[in-house]
Length: 81
Image 1 (tube, rainbow, N blue to C red):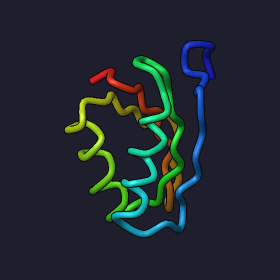
Image 2 (tube, rainbow, N blue to C red):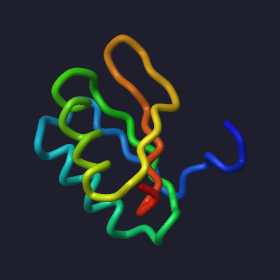
Image 3 (tube, one colour):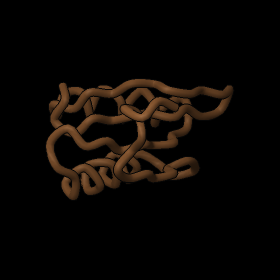
Image 4 (cartoon, rainbow, N blue to C red):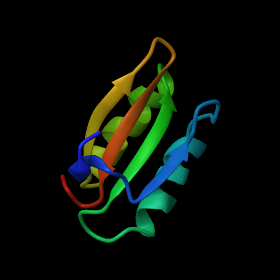
């Protein structure tokens, strides 16, 4: 991972149902300053389909930095959308 992609905070939401996973992402982002990064591990399927667009719509930049068959890792830049 390059220095610019080092997260300021990390959360593992694998196994967390919707909409709780989205709410936890939003709460974690509230504690960050503009341009700080949150690393999120998230299940595939409904969580991916709901959380990623929701964060983008809220004005954050979302990048997929790793993925497996059942989960993916996001780097969310606070206010970076």
